[in-house]
Image 1: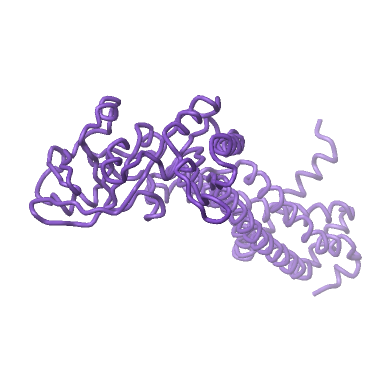
Image 2: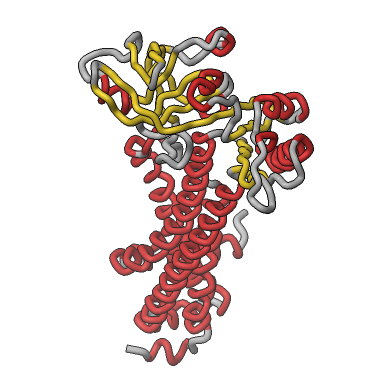
Length: 406
């Protein structure tokens, strides 16, 4: 047997639904504020997560978990010493002395000119060791990278950038062609590009030619490196690897020599702080949208209470209690805010699926289900909080005065 309380609750829901159906346009317009607010909350978190993932992908594209070192000062009075230079022996010391390191590489570059078919063109000549491709995530478009034999035998082979290949060999494949850099003629064995462009902020330029590191001695007279790279096994090992690389260089060279040892963690940290600040600002904006929608719910329901004063009087006259009237109007507010929240969340989660094909590199757009739950709860709470005042006003109306209202 159905209890009286159950009947009253069902009647409350039916009356609330009938009232909303009778004022569809008003209910829809009131609901739109909640739709925008809840969608904004979910989209803000989605954009923040997408931006963070994109930034991390860009940094890791330059080189994942990298520490890099350079000599910045020879001595306190500017005195120079060849013993301060970074050597291949330092690179091997880092490889063998730091267990968290998975790969090491060294580079040295200098401006040169390349001659192809009698035409001279300025280029950046970069000597690299075997691990450079892995560390810098180079993409080999055609041909291959240097192997151990190329490095050991000082093979006169080179790789060139795609931009340089397009300029020097516009009508054919660059692989297998010969280029002369200074007094040495090289065989092009590969064409490459950076996975993520560093816009010339590293040793790689748009017109770079990379050769085995050992061949740089023909141009510089020495086998010292300009930059020493070390790749950590995991992101959380980067600070320790950075500290140990600096320690190894200091222990192997004069005390007066100074080395700049850095990693990409500071860039990532700055990017995350910017992302967090932007997220906070956008969340405040979305909360303001929800507050405005809550005020809209309150205003509309206050007008609705006035318009339905006689109806409230009739319900009270036939036995409806204060709590029943209060529940009726709170249910109406909950339906408006809850439905608006669901519509907003559906829109916010569906939009990333629609725009995904247009994002660079098919970038994944993660949707945080925590943000979905929070948006729904906050939206419903907003409707109930701002709907309470009109509901209490309706519940406190006197039956006799309500029945006299025209």
